Amino acid sequence: MKLFLDEPGSREIAEAVEEAGVCATSRLAYVECGTAFARARREGRATGRQLTSMLQALDQAWEDLAVVELDEHVAAAAVRIARDHPVRAADAIHLASALTVASPTSGIVFACFDRRLWDAARAVGMAPFPSEL
Image (cartoon, rainbow, N blue to C red; front, top):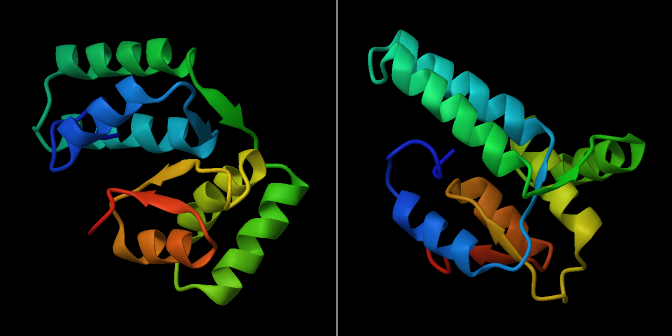
């Protein structure tokens, strides 16, 4: 979402994505972005035209992402993560998705700005971004 909504961390994420060779995300991120954009419109933080523009930008950016589907393996990994760490369901899915495309020792960076998710990513051996929260 930080790529599309101006909020704390947006600039840093844009720079990190620009530097990355490949970016991956859970299919869930598409829904989360779309609903966040709609909420911004409802709350008066975006106009109808801005909403349309953000949705178009999301669709365009989505084409360049490696998308991890929520299958039985990702779901089982998410449950294990939630069992061991105090994260929300969606966050467990995101971390489980990252673990399906990278081993903790692969040097893959896991970007998030939620403290609990950031701590969980570190605990499972991922390199969280930013390096400090």
